[in-house]
Image (cartoon, rainbow, N blue to C red; front, side):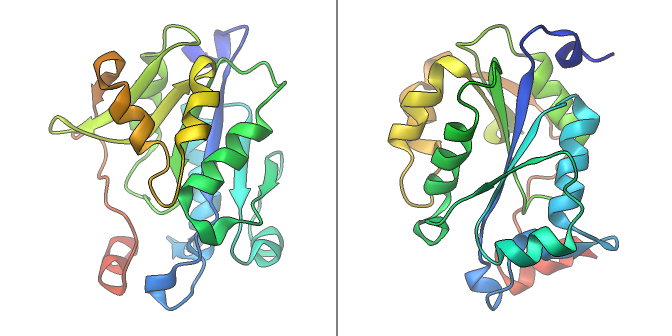
Amino acid sequence: MTRNEDRKTPVAGLLLAAGGGRRLGGRPKALLEHRGRPLVEQAVDVLRTAGCSRVHVVLGAAAGAVRERADLTGCVLVDNPDWEQGMGSSLRAGLGSLAGTGASAALVLLVDQPGIGPEAVARVLAAQEDEMSLVCAAYEGVRGHPVLLGAGHWAGAAAAATGDRGARAYLKAHEDTITLVECGDVARPHDIDTEDDLVHLE
């Protein structure tokens, strides 16, 4: 049993999977295939394997196709009608969907980072102490994903989430309170943003 499964108020996995892949010719990132499966399916498995029994998935671009083609059984699917406004709108929608669930924190993972597996997620989860925790994976000391937002930070992070910045501005404002967990030995934090990045899916 992982530490997260043993908590009375477990951490929820929050997967941001609404991107439309504008620089990828309009291919929704959630449906890009890696090792024969859509990225959104793989990311859900990563969160569950690491110990997140509750997983909320924020959908946007081609949400109907994602629901049809990806196996998201057991997930809470959150539609973000404003997904074209950027990642900030997805973070707001996702955090809003967690209200009333009793989760002590949200473990935020991006669908377009297939190099981040359950080992990195589990390390970040293990560093949580309470509902005011802020924990980020680090790669050679540089802050990255996944990010754990204690429930006490949800309102502030949502209010600060604009455009494609997600929680970046909020984290910067609270830099002194962030726990960094080095994950460079178990994960690769590359994003799938452009055609050149598709090499990471091979």
